[in-house]
Amino acid sequence: MDATALTLTITSLVISILAAVGTMSQAWWARRASVRTFKVEVLNGLSSGSAVVSGPRVLSEQSARRLAEQGFTHPMVGAMVRNTGALPLVVNSWSVVLAGGTSLIPLADLEGPALPHQVPAGGCQVWWTPITAPMKAAMKVFDSAAVGDEKFRIRVEFGDGVSKTSKVM
Image (tube, rainbow, N blue to C red; front, side):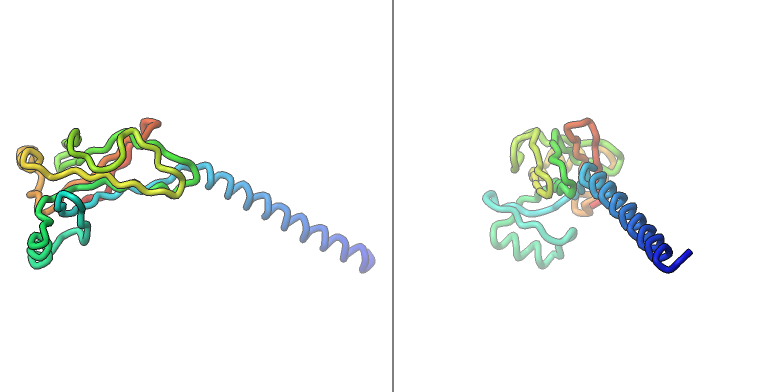
């Protein structure tokens, strides 16, 4: 084999390898773009009636006192859905899941868009509901930790029947 033929063979091999890597890369990106990925997080906050302050998972007594002085006295729980995929997703409902597995489904006083709601690709949406006296009573009845300990999760039901539960708050 002369030098020209060897050079052409090696060049052809390099081009073939680059083409194969390029094709696999395109297939991987196409698959990644079509997969629906999302994150569900539980939020806690305090409401003044016109705004919600959401901060660290457990507020110090000093922070809670300072916020109460400014009118933030009503405890709230929220569900945040972050669409990290390339396709929109539909949120049908959300619920608060207690430590024992019992779900509390907020029916009234919801802050956020009406359900079902479509979250666009790359978008994020939050829904809030007050932690009411009946909700606190239910948490104690169903053997959940005290509300102050924030031992609950959020479950979100999507339009295709899939559900996702957040990590424990």
